Length: 464
Image (tube, rainbow, N blue to C red):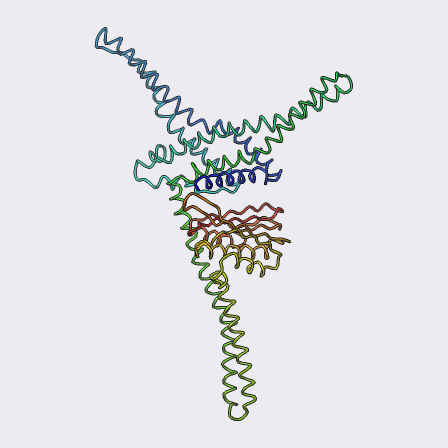
């Protein structure tokens, strides 16, 4: 059984890697190449804090070794030890007073640059505590010391070093395969024209081999770009965005941001229900009451007319029941409670004016809370597609993503071929979706380049 699970895990890992490598457009790959080249250039800045600290540590070791040797020599002569204090003080000020705080400041700057790059290019966001806010977390004279030498400062040094080494590795591969391969192919192709006119066949064959090899290297490099970018993003998530203290700070910031939005959303939902009941069911119930009153008044004088009015009241009561079911369906549909997402998602898709293809691959049902949140996410996403996307087709997929032990996820993906460019601030309801998913420690991702459609992915804990 364990071997079967391990094999299944390897298959899923291989499938995920294949999707990452091949399911990317060439425009995205080109952006990735430019990003990795920028990482290579910035790696010098990212590695500078570690280099400065290494130089300071080396100075301490060398100075200590030199002083011990000098002291031992002098002690053998007499007890009066004379040291070059002037040079020692100047070097100490540079390597012990200047280098360490400057290294942590540069590391914090490197983290800020990397965070901005990941957010602006790939939409990977995380909390960046402002300088004044971080300084205010301590009191008195220890504020500056905590900012320069606290845990966040050394974490920044570690991440800056990791990002610098990764930039050298990924950027070097990109330069070596893509840039160098294309440059060699272009140069060889230009030289091929001269050899065709006046050149030996062996030289032409060798040059053609170089061109083919360069193009093949560039092609392999373009295939590897998504993996290299994904590795950089994953390292950033682990070290820069998902540390324990960072998660706590992010959680607090998210709670502050989402609290008022959830209150406003609840109030807006209450007003919607009140409006629906007042304009629909309440008015229809009033009509039923008036019809029954008319039937009662005519019951003795005109029984036939009274029966007709009773039939009318019965029909109106059925309309009220249908109206109330519509209101209740907006809250939690009965089909979801009874049969789960496999039956509820096609019903939600059927109400969308855009053709929707539904693919549900769920071997069993998640928790009721996860089902409710997932159903709401899909309904809201389809509403956004109908209102804003100008799409011709939509695909909805629900699947179970296996994790470690209790870390399984319910993954819902809504893909459309519309205009793209979805913005949370444009009244698309993305903030509401994010709040709902985040309330159970889920994750919501939106990939929406302008003119290329939108892919909305919600990962919800299976046992939420």
